[in-house]
Length: 102
Image (cartoon, rainbow, N blue to C red; front, side, top):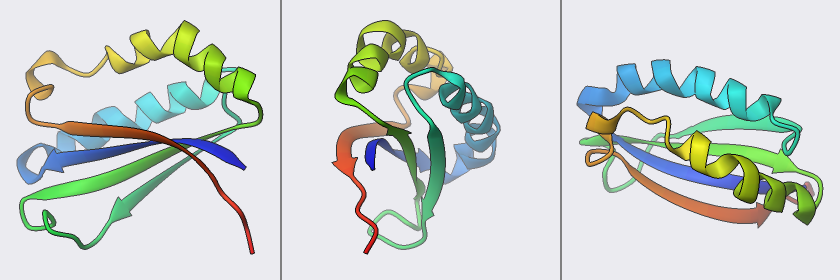
């Protein structure tokens, strides 16, 4: 299964409000024709675990055309709906991957 993953590091003081924003954002992403499943993971350890919370948001897609459709049609809007006052506090890293169930 192919997925688009967004790794997000959120300062602890923004965590509650961020999750309130993230849930409907992921629901909206899941309604796009490009994706058929969304998953949210929370990383429980790591070097920043005392100062920030790391989330991994995965959006599963079937074909490379689906991902291209997201990038060319929807990505700018979806990435732009983060409140402006958070943009300097929250970091994002995006990657594509393949999930193989053993």
